[in-house]
Image (tube, rainbow, N blue to C red; front, side, top):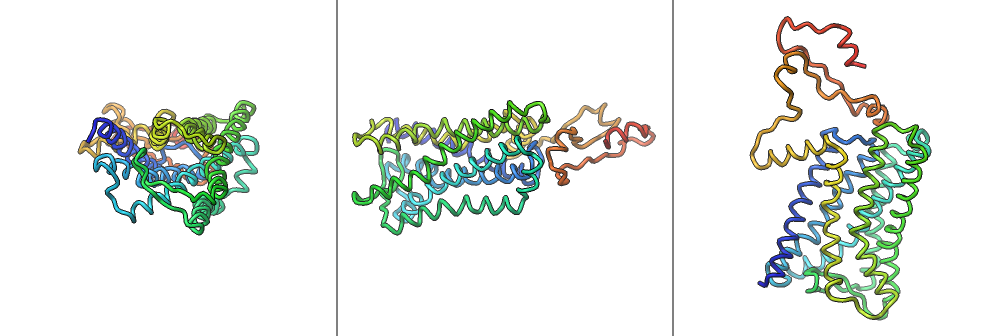
Length: 345
């Protein structure tokens, strides 16, 4: 095993650990812990974005680690066929979900009342189902034309190939699965940025934070996806092959996309950063209580997460946030009625 293989295996292992831990924390946070200042529809999209990232880690990053440590493909022909076939639908689903999320935030800026009325949770679930099924249809079409899956030693992964008489089919599949969704993400986020600036005065803090989060996620994905986009365009326009270092490097740059979403949420949302930090500490055996307060404050009054009015308005009035007033810890501690009414408001 040479030094390059060890370094690449270590890099992929780090990506896999951080990606699995971060995206699992996102799923747990969106399901049980209300740390995201997002509306319920955007939360559904964010949850499925994390699921697609985990699928990509399982289909591409983990097999890449095994290939470098084993000195070649050691997982067998069946795993080679499965990973080489399903990784492209995972990427395409991720891009479609990111496109739909950006579109949703754009319409929340230009027509917030109409968007809430048109897109409810049931319709959002149907839309998410379509984004999962559509890339699988493209993959099924490719399988009907006998696409071959072969091991590529340059990237340490199994990849798809087409026969020479199916070049047009190959380019059409890439166009609909990768190129068009990527260009759509760039265009819609430019529109979202313009709409956020135009209607910034009528937005509350939670809405601005949600728009910023989606734009940062989209920007980081586009940066990681750009080398792959250049590689695909190069192969369509020019017949001359790319340098080996670029053919290998664009795959490892794209690996970064699976850890940038959790990092973005940590930077833009302090509550999620606290939740993720405490989750990591619990995994290594530490016991950390969420929301620790000073003893002096705890003796006076204990209030579990009282959201601001802007956060309450962002929840669409669906009862996602609950205000819980805990009675004084010590008997005889007097709390005036006016203070309780203020907390309830």
